[in-house]
Image (cartoon, rainbow, N blue to C red; front, side, top):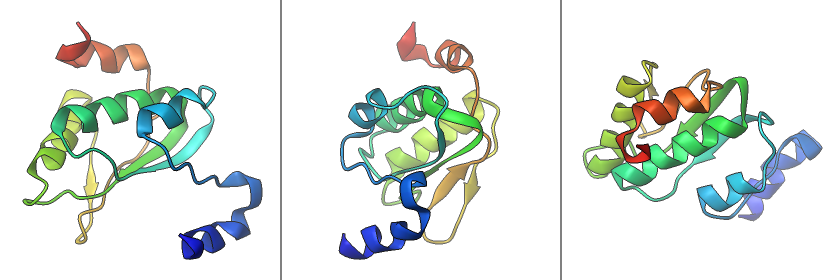
Length: 120
């Protein structure tokens, strides 16, 4: 944790480490204020999708949502990420270490909620 905090120092007040559940952290943030969010949280499909849905409210236009554990071992994470990509007609980028990201996720929350069956 000390290394991570030291790595954030060059960014000053522009970077903030929030050690909370995704939903709790998001509730403390104003709308459209986040450029980059990295999520490595609950790995169940519904939780992954809910995290992304909630994050879109606070993302700036052009903001990037990044996550971890897209792999066969974390099948439900992969399923949630793919559901978001398909449901929101967004591309998902993947790296060899299981990191995934959605470029430009600053989209309307209503569009997302309409696509997610649990919100109906």
